[in-house]
Length: 269
View 1 (spheres, rainbow, N blue to C red):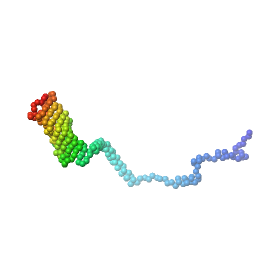
View 2: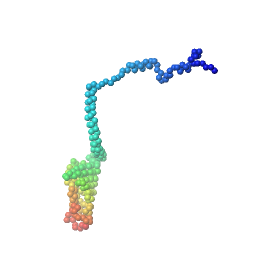
View 3: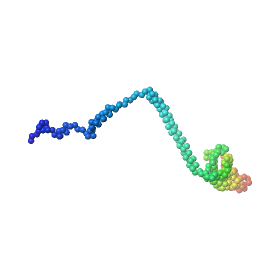
View 4: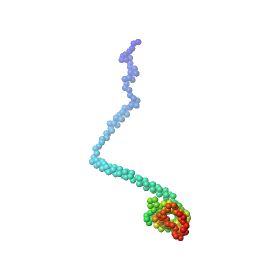
């Protein structure tokens, strides 16, 4: 078998030889002559933007901005620190406001009556007191009728007096409280007193009752026909006839005065 040389002039070139000599080009890069000319014209006509040097006005404006930033940033930091320091006080004020709003939401006013009424004041020694009631009815500019009144007087650290009743009349400007039906007095030293009626002078700290009295406390048990309590002095005076049973070891220095001499001398010790 004899071969023929590829460069033999008697044999024409084949199609495979043409494909090997032709340059290879990807189809996605294939562009027409018009596209090439158009893209080259775009690049040739595009102007190159040059950065301009700032003038005196631009430099002055930048200096002013820098000076302002030197003051503005520290002031902003101080404001933030101040807000952080003041936030606990703000939070307490918000909580108090919410508590007040919650309390006000339970108060209803209708036809001259108010539910969950509260009256606050100070006595002549500056001690605070508070009078509350389930319902208060304004009878006149001075008189207020109370349902289930409660009077609380604070005399000092750990020293207070608390009085309740079923009904009462409060003279607001004079700070007088007239209690009726199931009056109960409780003092911080453990003394309790029961009576059908009692009159309280909230301003001067005096409680008076002209009805029967039943009192119990550290001193013992006492029954009398009337009593007067000096809240600030812690002294209770009882009016006879009456009966008093003293606890063992009582030394007579608790501020309790026995009934007046008109009482029968049949007390037990």
